[in-house]
Image 1 (cartoon, rainbow, N blue to C red):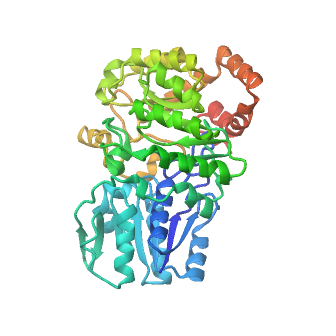
Image 2 (cartoon, rainbow, N blue to C red):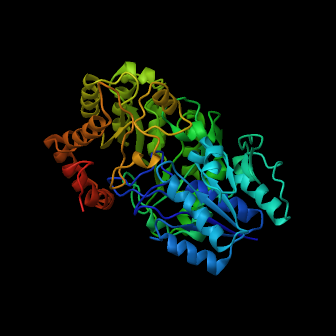
Image 3 (cartoon, rainbow, N blue to C red):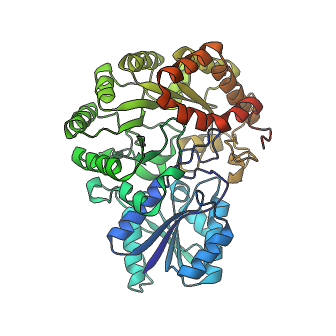
Length: 487
């Protein structure tokens, strides 16, 4: 049985699996990590699998057609995102036009939130794997290989049965993450790791996770709400380090790992043990990771000893009331203390700021900008609120009548950049996007910041590659903003 796991073509440099899918201003392009996990699970079950990233290969839909004609897969697993969903579903239509017996399956946070709507909108889509889809795919493939037409026993599946759409029992979250294949091995077999770039990590990098899920309930965060849940499950320390060692030994020229967990820093005892064991095993490769702004100084010191160079942190807002409204469970004082401690420990910080959530006003926008300047992180990004189906933020915007459109493609500007479709009488969506443009300019064009970056590059030449690579694209957007063509 042949299976194609496809990250389908869309816009050039479109990052489908990032938390807010778009073409980024820095040229960041994410690994199709969750799709790779699915491909690895299918391979582990004995199926003949191709994992193809149509974005990094610069494929068109014509290339997809040619692949299907040449290879005749029995099943296509297609990754999706909210802004690209219309284009993603087109893959089912193309596949069925060539080979009607192909089973077309769609995965990702968008279809997990809207499985029935997805199947209703595309008659050529056979199934949606809801939530964590690793085992759902292998069980579905087993049923197909046995020529079973009744898929009702496959948990976590929504599927088409004649004219009916059936949503099966929900699949429990995977508890034994060590039982899953190491995604680095799947990358190594199927992808070119130099095709991927994350502007805050040293290039080339490899993106991995050490656990799934997040115990916090931030209203905008799409993966815990639609896919991985709010119960944190960790891989064992040795399993994690085995994968890090594999990367170090097999990815020639790799400079860094990016740890994409939502919750790597929640269990401080485990994190310190991970760092200590990494040092004991002599694993040298450094890493960048996501973090909350509440990690204590001792843990930060352990992370630095273990090779942590930079942390990506969601500070979100400079107004405490808005932080409370979004369910962040973080105080401004915690953020200030965290940044001081991180700098003292020798760890750089990339700050993320999100505007447009409940309670936002023009005054609180300025509070957030001043907050970002005072934190003075190594780099910063400013996002307008982007609401995705399945999230509490989306439900809030719909309930209050703030959604401008049901056309998901409008979550992107004409150039594929982040847009906002939430608008209130006192704060328009365009104002939010333009504020983010202005905030970036004010943050990065400060003389103090420019001198700091020049000094950093002089002291740490290793930062040069990632800085220059991201600035090649970023400077145009910094100058021209989101609504002006730059090419």
